[in-house]
Length: 279
Image (cartoon, rainbow, N blue to C red; front, side):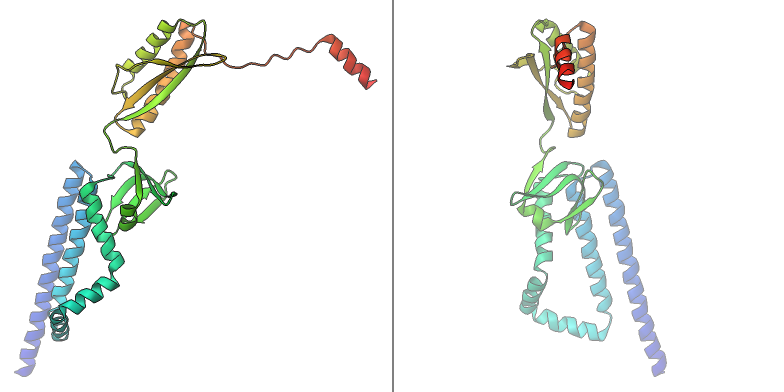
C-alpha cells in the first residue's frame, strides 16, 4: 500500500511538471507568434527588447515552478525568500552587469535613439566602437551589422553611455552635390538641366530647391544644391543617378565641365640640343 502511495505521489509530481512544461511552452509559443506579427507590421527596437525580456521572464518562472515540486528545493527557496534582503544584496552584486544591461535596454527601448534598420555609429571616448545597420536587440545587447557583413554585439549598458551618431534619426536625409561649369556657359540653362534632373529623380522628396553658385575657381563656376530623400540608402542611389544624368544632359546641351589639361610641346631645337648632348 505504501509503495502504491509512493508511486502515486511520484506520478502526481511528474504530471505537475509535465503540465508546467506544456503551459509555459504554449505561452512562449504564443509570445513568439504575437511578437512575430507585431514585427512584421513594425520591426521596432522596443518590440525586440520586450519579446526577449518576456521570454526570459517566462523561462525563469517555469524553472522556479518546476523546482518547487521537490521538497528539497522548496525548503531552500523558503529559506532564501525569508532572507529577502540578503538575497537582493547578493543577486545585485553577482548580476550587476546583467541588471545594468537590462535597465539600459529599457531606457534605450523607451527613448529610441536607434531603431531596427537604421545606420548608426557608436562612439565612446572618441573611439569608434561599432558602425553599421541595427539588426536586432535583446535584453542584454544590440546587434549592429557592419558594412563588411560582420555582426557587432554591443552590450546595452555600453550603448546607453556612448555617443550615438544616427543617420536616420530625423525624417529625411540631405546631401549636397556640386557641378563645375565653364565661365562661358549659359547659367540659366545649367540651372534648368539640374532642376529637370531633380524633378525626374523618383527618390528625391524635395523638388523645389535652391541652386546656388557656391564658388569661383580658376576653371569655372561651381553650382551647388541639396538632394533630399527619405533614407540614407535612397540618398546614395539618388546622388549617383543625378551625377550620371546631369553629366549626360550637360553633354547634350553643350555645357562644358572644365578639367585641367597639360600640353607637352617638344620643339625640334630641344631635340637637337638633346642629341648634341648625347654625342
